[in-house]
Amino acid sequence: MSAILVFQILVIVITLAFAAYLITDIVQNKETLKGKHWVSLTFAGVITQFFDTLGIGSYGTLSAWFKIGKAVPDKLIPGTLNTCTVVTCAFMTLAYTTTIDVEIPTLIVPVVCSTIGAFLGAGLVSKLPVKQIRLGLGFALIIVAFVIMAGLVGWMPGGGAEIGLSAGKLVILGILAFILGALMTIGIGIYAPMMAIVYLMGLSPYVAFPLMMGSCAFLIPAAGIRFIRESRKQKHETYDRKAAITVNFIGCIGVAVAVFIVKSIPLTALKWVVIGVLCYTAILLIRNAFIQSEADKVGEKGETASAAIAE
Image (cartoon, rainbow, N blue to C red; front, side, top):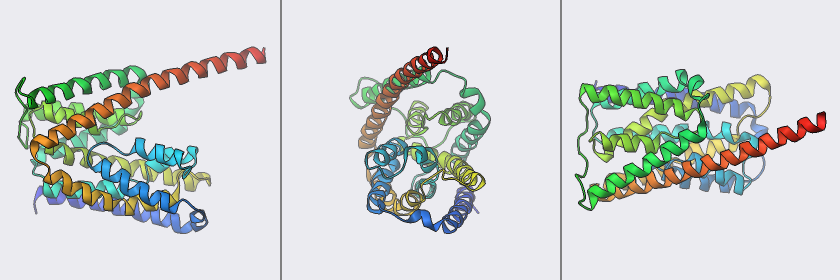
């Protein structure tokens, strides 16, 4: 049995365990499936997971869709995001590890290290200034996008086409993946940074896709089960079950289409796609940094006013 097959079996086992846990909770709470928004959530699943498979990420687009369409209450969005994309992420992982060649150590190291980072690094990262992290990462992604573009237009060497790393580079990749896993706990996605790391290390841009999806295939189910368990324990809703059904299962249609597109894109065109993803993510990070900063100021003013009233 090949190492890739063992990896895929682990992904399937974890996903089936999550799916069983999710379906059991849904069956026990069938009354929450009543109401509208089924059509909106179906479109959300197909469209957002299509772009997620291209590496753009879906948490931001899903959040916007849920809020604009009033399909999911604001208080349920965090739990919904962590429960509605587990199956589609597993599908992406299986598809990319089947269609894209990558050496098994180069696949396993970031998956394991990012998972460990998410669990062990969360406490440390939560104490760091989120604004500065977002700004730094945002500008770093813009620089990497420029480097890739410079290679495409002939200003400098155009990156590599390797499918595996040497032992020394694997150590560096593991450390960076650990950091990215920890950063995911404060809402900074792993997709675009992983694309940048893959490119800068001389790997083929194609390799980024199984690495990105493989990491999330182990991270997201753990978070999703935590939200479902919390819902059972506290006897109140922590996620939207209609969204969990539609995005998880119907969203696989969007995944299948996108995987075919990525596999069919010539390397040069794929590099332009990567540039677009990096720039899009960088703009979001920088924008969110300033939005969060303004929100903090408003919060501080509110606290000051409340204190004055109390006095």
